[in-house]
Image (cartoon, rainbow, N blue to C red; front, side, top):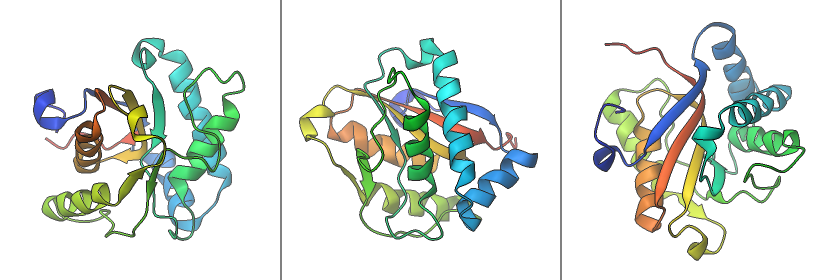
Length: 187
């Protein structure tokens, strides 16, 4: 996905804090599937640390938003928990993060999960996921904005692709990605 021209992939860049392996993979799973919320605080701090130490990547970013999970997701809305923790960790309010409970991008319907699926199933799930998202702020806020879309794991890139496509179609000038971890390249 990242090798495609920007016009085809719809996001301009994706940065990863680390590789998706070992202890980090295990702790992301602990938060995501066991609901151990303490990891959200640590992941929020990691994201803020990355953003603070990469000012060139943050240059021009108007909004930092999480790639949302459905409000009924069990055991936890892990992305929202991470984004709330990131806001708390940004003590100087230097980053364009939304306060807890006021997320700019929300998922209003449950869709199929993409974990452990084929590439085609991931693409179908990503299309449905993006269609279930709503921008909660004034829609004019997104016009010509640069959005940093945060997620936990970058696997195939399908979900980031489809969410970026949706945001760009709504008027965003640029969509960038930041993930806690990316899977190692397979080929």
